[in-house]
Amino acid sequence: MRKTILSFAMLGISATVFAGGVLTNTNQSVAFIRMMTRGAMIDSDGPYSNPAGLGFLHRDGLHLSFNWQNAYQERNIDATFPLFPEANNHRFYKGTASAPIIPSLFLTYKNGPWAISAYGGVIGGGGEASYSKGLPMFDSAVMAKIAANPTVQTVMKAVGAQAASDLYDMNSSMKGRQFIYAFQAGVTYRAADWLSVYAGARMNYFVGGYNGYVTATAKPELLQNPVIQAAAAANPQLAAMANQPLVDLRLDVDQKGWGVAPIIGAHFKLNKWNIGLKYELKANLNIENETKENSDPNGALAPYGDGVNTPSDVPALFSGAVMYEILPTLRASVEYHHFFDKDAEMANDKQKALTRGTNEYQVGVEWDAHKYFSLSAGYQRTDYGLSDEFQYDTSFYCDSYSVGLGGVIHLSQRMKVNVGYFWTHYHKYTKQSSNYNGTTLPGTNVYSRHNKVFGASIDYIF
View 1 (spheres, one colour):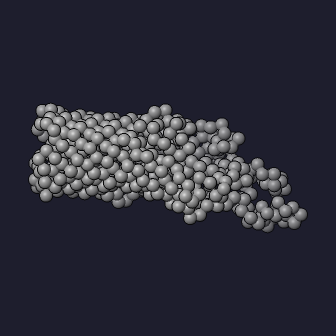
View 2 (view 1 turned 180 degrees about the vertical axis):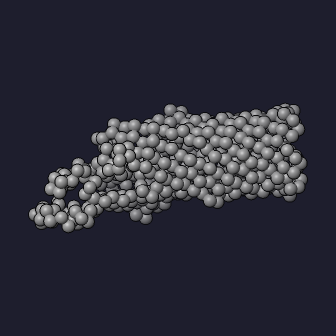
View 3 (view 1 turned 30 degrees about the vertical axis):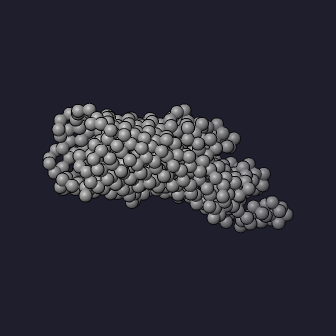
């Protein structure tokens, strides 16, 4: 029964609590949080956002930026399924993903037309997603299989139960964590007064894991029923149902993997215009299991056997940005990102279910309100190429828009502090199915998210 009750084959709870594509985080700096558009800016966060622009930094020397972010996200599922015993067969699942401390570090050493830069941070994931009451895909599959069991149907008739769920208690929980740590290094060369170019690479190191269980046991009061006790004495199957769990699936696995992404970029500086271009190639990344517990290694949980490898490529990314200096104290910029998600190999070729890659559209403005502080704001629209086949309870996405606000405190010519906050509004995604989670019954899931991120950084030029 276990092989058909539950499959963790698509398990991959995404803990991403950032802006960006299906797997990539783009808010690597607090400057991004407060403005959203950094692809054409010439600043200390350039090693990630605009590495080619570092050739135009206004001062030679060592530029350092240390960033700290705090992120929180809710990932909710409104599920409707005929076997759920709640009112209107409706059950609400609330998941939380939090990352209280997310650091990132940017370093640039500039000397004349040359700049050497490095970046370290969390390029993907960034927290732990937890569903304390499990997920509908697991609960519904278990409930459907138990309801179809002939022994359970016999017990229902014997005790006059209206639903199979009256006979047992079910508990489930699921947690997933996902971090992709990154170290990037490269070289920038200012080839002309109007042109600077960059070449580098980023090492991506994946650390994650999943811990979950689904159990179903007969209700204690059922076992005390004289009719059931008498029947169990003559029926081995009924006796087994009374004395053993109906379902007991458990998984505890750690995962690791790594991959390298080459990166190239160019920056054009034309009077009041700045144009930044960057292309990150795909990082081929395979994740290997280090399994601590697997209750069904030859069945439903076979993909999570010890030593099994699963592809999880970091997709290629193209970004282009334009910044215009309206006034010496006022700058505005627009930016575009495209993630080549369909070309990045995922578990079970899940990427083929996408209709296209992810598109992001951004606009931002920055105003030097005073010699000691600047104000900024930004907007981002994220549009995935989603389909019902791509959306799973363990890994779902919603189109969104984000708004960022913040500012800069200029403590001196060499030191400044960035502060920023952004929140994201997600559009709900409804997935209806006539064979809900592999059962023969219909069902509906409404996916939604809520997100907020706060951050602060300190920049210094040595």
